[in-house]
Length: 498
Figure 1 (cartoon, rainbow, N blue to C red):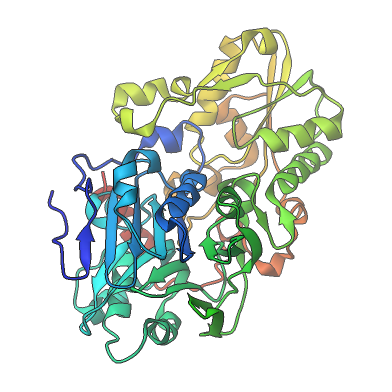
Figure 2 (cartoon, rainbow, N blue to C red):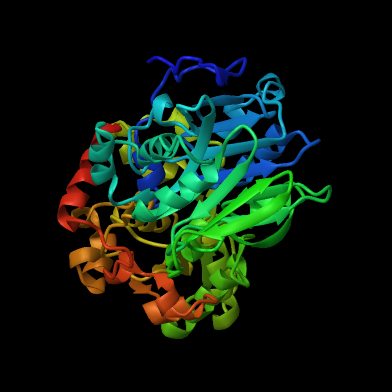
């Protein structure tokens, strides 16, 4: 596998190298906790006088949960853009030597989980493009475009990574500034996109008119700026949250400060699943706390589906806050009946059939002293295919559980996501065609209850019309051209990545 060749404005940092291993789509990470995989995390920093690469590194570290396949940082001191990216976790990709080589006053960073395009070094981000005028740009993208094939035909390139196509579209606007190129190009992009992009002197951030994925602005104590996918990335570098990048807005940050322009009227439909699972519990969005929203989901579940039981346990880590809410509302004791092995990393797990059969046991272990002889309420965030939930129930019974009552903080997932979450095709979604009782029978638990869609929405600070509920309701806020054909294409691209 070969790396990109250095160019006049694009230099590989010392220690940067092409990946030696293309990580396959990891069935264990998706199946063993039976949750959709995260998508990507982005960070942008403009802070003259600061070590911007290190600030970006720490921001990416806080966003590692959003993508574990690859990571990269681009930086500029005003003369050229230097890019360092590789396959692996953030702390595997970057060393002190590599970070020291990323000098400058602005940078963008990205951690990736592939939703389109193969899992390979070539598709790792930031994506770098030279412009015909002699400069360059580096781009990091969270989301997924639904008109990638159309844009690829326009560029006369093979359909592939939508971030690559986005960078190429911006780079070819030779007669205008990067800001103006964004204003021209962004209205033609269809789908979900939260983007950080830089040239040699300025940082830009823009977000699709629906604002499906988060993108937030913070201010550093010394006066610099940070843009990131979640407030956790702002917090870790000491930036104070200022506001979100608004749907349909492009923000430009340079030596004169921050200014913004509109490229489209806003029509916000924020991803509901960010509240359920994707975002970190300490993330704050639209005046609400993810942690308290998830506790509210648990309380709502306890009201909707009470059961005679002895104890409430979470499926770590996503079910923890909801389980605490369920316990508080029901009056049942809360306990950690499952222990997560934090050191089973995706790098060291190859998804062979024999390891798939080990499944959930590689990452979760029951605490026999807690579960044995007890009637359990087990709280988790979602069920995708159902195989993992089935393994989990069997494992708890083997540990001596008297009863297992499964409570899920999302409604049944019935439809695929086209906006940046690696969610199974409809044929693989256990909730697409089976009734809840049929799913319960397949999983083998004593009772199964999903939170209602209205109950889930009421647990967030949003009204229904301001949320994307497509994976639950099938109501897609952004039209998907040839939805069935799009689904087939996405499935093909995933198969190409393994």
